[in-house]
Every structure is written in C-alpha cells, then in structure tokens.
Image (cartoon, rainbow, N blue to C red):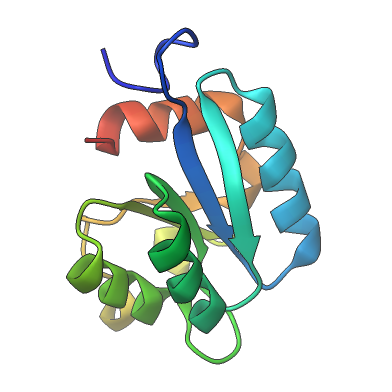
Length: 132
C-alpha cells in the first residue's frame, strides 16, 4: 500500500506547493492538511524559491504552477526531473493541457491538473497514479 492511501501509514506524503498566487498556496495547504495521509511541508512563491525549497525540504510531491514570473513551472519541472528524479511533480494551471503551448509541455510524463479541480480526491488520485 502506498503512502497517502492509508491514513495510518507511518509517514504522510510530504507535499510542497510552488505558485505565485498566495490564495492558491493557502487553499492547497488547507486541502493537503485536510487530506488524511498527506502533509504540507511548505510553499514557495516563485520557481527559484521552489527549487531551493525542494532541496531543503525533500517533498515527495510538488504541486507546481505552470505560469509564474521568472522561472516558469515548465522549466522548474525540467530542473527538478534532473536534480530530484524521486520527487513527483504535478503541474497545475487554470487552463487545460490543450490551452498551453505544446512546445512548452513535458509530454505526458508530468501530469497537469486544473487548479479549480484540486481537492482531496484529486490529491489522493495523483499520488496513487504517479507516486513511487
């Protein structure tokens, strides 16, 4: 059984949120903390701070906004794949995959979910389908 599927597991799935919108970071933290088997280990407001936070905090799962000023989520995902391949990265966006320029996407290897769909059920499903 994977962490996140069993609330009595010895260690919760550690989640970091990287998003330039404070309101979404707050919402994500609330959802994560309200979902048994998951814990929020922190958040970052931009890509550079997010990369640094992954190195310091060692999350199992990163919720990563696609569009941010400075280093965007696509580039952050590329860097994390190279430096922290054990970390599951999920891109989050207000739009669908079809709304994003195809050249920017990392193929189907990195899941993309809409922010408006984010909740406990989706969080558990993402970990079940993409967690290690």
